Length: 197
Image (cartoon, rainbow, N blue to C red; front, side, top):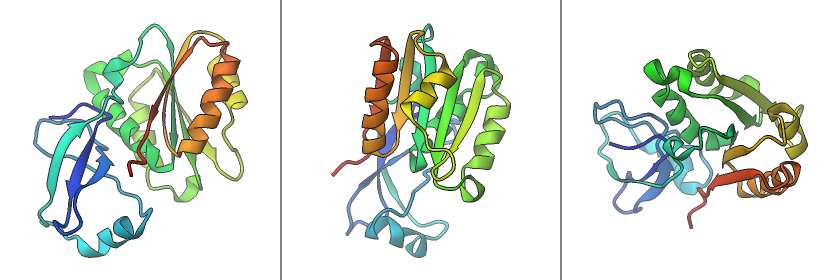
């Protein structure tokens, strides 16, 4: 099994080798995992045309420590996803369904290029609807860009907080610096570095 927020190395073609992808589902105990893969380069762009149902794949892992179980329950939880960086949070939200639904008290900020065409918006809304302590915020790249100041205003700086970020490295670094300043150092910032090369 895996813990929500972890990643695995996946081999779709033995000639290409393994590539890291975040697991976008909670462990349901049925030996299945879900990966949401964005076409970011030549390899991932070609995948959808080369894979078919029943294609053999090799999954190695899980790895990583971007895990909800490591969150400090006494700190304000601020979760930030940029684009495909939503995948570990999808797994987190799935894992919180049912008995754990009342355990979460967090703001999830999802930074998208275009909310109207984003493939994860509906799934996020369904998962969030079952979690009364989760506030879901969408930030369209063009009409509502996310800034450290905006996040601080929404999330109530300077109460002690813990930020979990997965998305483009540059956005993460800018938000980290701005949020640490807004919180006067009373903030822990976890960043998933998914740009392994």
